[in-house]
Length: 323
Image (cartoon, rainbow, N blue to C red; front, side):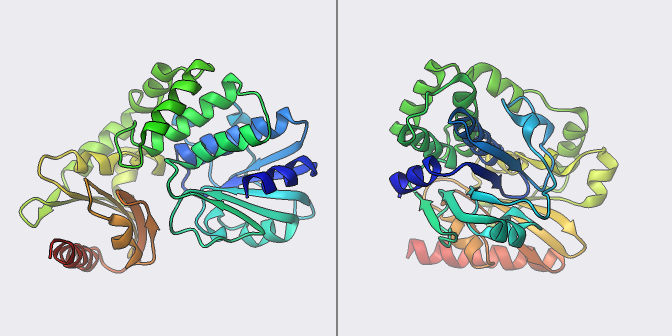
């Protein structure tokens, strides 16, 4: 499939590159690396995201080319959809994108991917979509520039939790080393993403920790962020990134849950786990998905009922696994 997609790229001229709403490092790093790869091949490229680029990722090379509107009559030879398990994850323009492109190419590493599009390259064994984009650059015989290396390194680093999650392999470290050799400044990237937080984000973290609670003798920990908390802290949605990992880091906690109020009685739940606990399976019970140790879902209802439902599912699956 990689060679097939490379042939499609080489024989096409105009491209749309996009990714999912609620942008993260893998999504942005992958699409901006793809932008530079296609640009270096002399292609015409539009990079579209429904959501604005979070401040923490505005340092990425090419971040300034991203647009947030699409011309209703514009068409493309190929639309490349990155890091999305389904087309609807790109947001409100999903149907327009589908009709505006001759070919839809999906590149992803989520096991829950439904293989949408005309050509689908999905590898759940990859640490990130960024890792697949590196292979993509090799298949196209594009030189690994500093800009491409920086974006791919960011994608891999953020989706592996700084190389701490179980999706990290020896190949991940080998690729990271190659990207550093090609100019990715790992110290600067780490500092800009993990050590440069705006004051509203710190305030929000403090408020969030006040909601910390535990179940099952501390094995399950959770926190909550509401829209009111965001307003009171002067924070943005993007400032919630990484909060779930604070819960995951508590000694004795095996499953961490982060409840984010999207609207009244409508919550996005981020799940993280340690070792062999499969939170992708847990999220799947609620229509979500992701990876063994990092997944998400969206649930409607009052928060206390949602909490009880999730804890019950986690306990049932853990009992099944142990027995």
